[in-house]
Each structure stands twice: as structure tokens, then as C-alpha cells.
Length: 312
Image: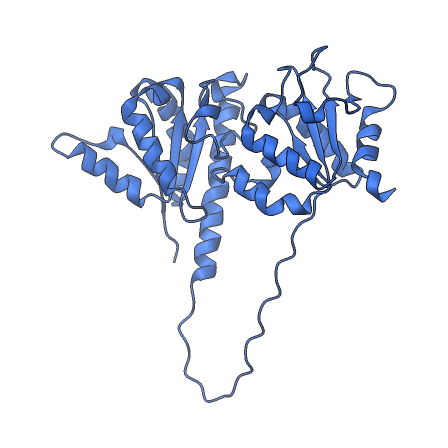
């Protein structure tokens, strides 16, 4: 039987305008009967505010955090966000940060969760605001669809009495792990350029691990990468306009060191927007660059050769 999924939205009062825009985008999912949206603005006089919030916080299988400087600065909403994160347990409970604007969320208690929009570009940074909210809506729809599949698969039909001797069930064969040729390590601000290179690699038969393609929103990227790192043969470390990469994150640096430990190629890559003197961690200094600021030699072909070096 179809079951409606409750979505609880945590937001700061100063971001009410963003809340209304998101509710408008999610209305199509409500009209389909897939979800029901709830937030604190629906609490009326005479109702115990704290008790009502806690009830929905504990029952909603999807919790959206409208991430802004306002939410992080507010003791009240940040506490709610902290409680929500403690419940995150995909696929049963998804806690999804929705990035409204630049807020330093990377240093918050929910920095390990995969956010929306999927390109990690805050909604207010998009030229087309409607496209940004549509991207968020589509990401939420993916989560809802996954939950419905899970609920359907876990429903077991009632046993039917029979006198016919049946053969014992054949255990399912273990799922085959997907193998990847290269892990694309990058700053989220450089996502469009890295995504374009990832697509070009796929066209040449290279299978890249790109967070946007391999992670569902609300899933901790560290856990997913821990499970898959042994299946990835190399790493490409991209540097773009910001002049630094994600290795300022200690966990990411640990993953890169793991590639070095396994003697897998770790390839520094300069994007076309990279500064003249990019920053690199010490363990990557001294390695040869692949420079997309130049056309000769062809940087894409250089990258492909670096990834497939062990197979030549």
C-alpha cells in the first residue's frame, strides 16, 4: 500500500522567504500524494511548540535543513539541526542540508552529509533561482522514490498453505561491487569544470567516481567512500580558481594518503581557472602536473594515460 512520506523542514525565521519558495516547488510532490510537508509555521496558538516540534523531528523520515548563516547562528535552530543529524540513518531517515547561501557550512555538524543542490552551489548563487529550487526538488524526489522501493521490497506476502513440497530457496548471489578507475577529488566550487572532465573520461571508457553521481543527498560521503575506496584504482586531485582543494578537510587528506599507501597513482590536475601558484599538500608536492590551462600537450589525454598507467 502506498504510504505518504513526511518531510520536516528546519529553518531560521529570517529565511521564511526561502521556505515559501521551496514549499512551492515541493507542492507538485504533495499533489501526487507522495509527500506531506511540515514545518514550525504550521503550529498554532495553544499548542505546545516544543512538544510538537519534537514529535515531527522524531517521526519524519526526511528532514531538510535550510542551511544559512541565520540557521547556524541561532542556538534554537542549530540545536534542532544537531538533533536531526543524530537521527540520520539512510535509507530509513535522511537528513539533507539545503544550501541557501555561503555560510561556512563545511565546518558545521552536518558537513559530512551530501547536500542539495547536488553541485553544492548555494541557491542564491545561481543565476536562475527557479532552476536551483527545481534541482533541490528533483533531489528530494530521488530520496522519496528510493524509500518507496525499499518499503515495497521489505513487504513479505502472507504464506499460502500448500501440500506441495517446494525446493529450498536459492540464496541470492552477492551483489557485484562497481569498480572505478579514478576518484575525482575537487573543491565543490570547481564542480562544473570537473563534471565536464568526468563526462569526457566516460566517453573514453574511463569510469570516474564523482560524488554527485555516486551519492544520494543526505548520505555521508565518507562512509560511502570508505566502502568503495578499495575498488578505485587512482585519484585525480583538481585545483581551480579558489587556489586550493578539499585536502584542508582532514578526512579527505586521509583518503588521499590511503591511495598513496596502496601505491595507486595520485595525479595533480590544474583546471583552466587555476592560479599561477596553486597550493598542494606536502605529500603531493614534487609530482608532475596535468595542466588544463594549456592545450599542448592535450591535458585530457595526459590524464587518461596517468589513470591507466598500470594497464599499459
